Image (cartoon, rainbow, N blue to C red; front, side, top):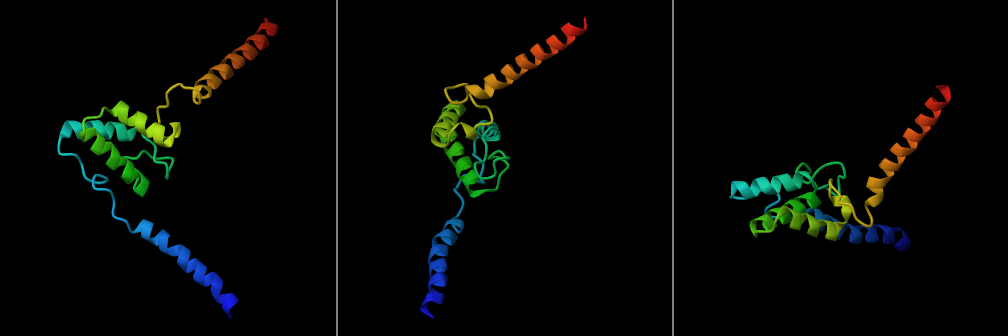
Length: 136
């Protein structure tokens, strides 16, 4: 009897913290805009270029995921505190990695993103040149 109850008890114990995480209220600025229209426009422009780490196919401006709400909150409070969008982007990239930005910068880990397409294009041009040079 005890062996049958053990998995049920363990499942209930593990489910408690998971349920608590989902019941947290959203961050204050997750769904509330800044009072200053110019600052809100800066925040919106930046949020459109940041990827939701939960959804991975939406910007944080479009996502309803709790993680995206927390990121929107961070962007808005940092804009309100006077940080520039590029400072905020740098902080988010430092915290979450290059993947968070839809516009990655060339760096030690991202250079292949920029170099490989150029190398493929050069190889394709060389192949086409050889093929057409033989015919002529």
